[in-house]
Length: 184
Image (cartoon, rainbow, N blue to C red; front, side, top):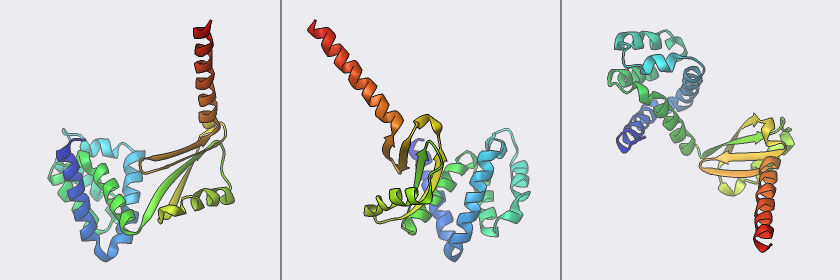
């Protein structure tokens, strides 16, 4: 994303954040609903398509308005009218980041080869207490990591997976083989 779009996304997200006021928690849930709605369906493709008229885009949003507060509907309408629909998901994600920041939350994703038990998740989250944040966890099962877990938060990754361990062993063995070949 270029600097201009980044500034636009931030400006729109801050505007929504400030307009939310005392209804921040409600707007947050509605934005989470919208993001799930946009990601699971072709609605976002439709809304961001330049050949779809503004009227049709507004009708699409109005069709789900019973799930959204008036302020959020108005915000989306302004975003559409200003031809920023292609940035809408980024704006809504940035808004959620602002909310999390204001509530001192950190969203982490734990990936494991199988479903983790609550005590295991608790151990992982407690190990991140040094960050001084309220930790919100999403858990993803990915059998390809073979075992262990991978934690992602922000731009940080803690990879304690069996797959990465085995990959490092393979890399080390290749290096050793090269050393042996070079000595012969």
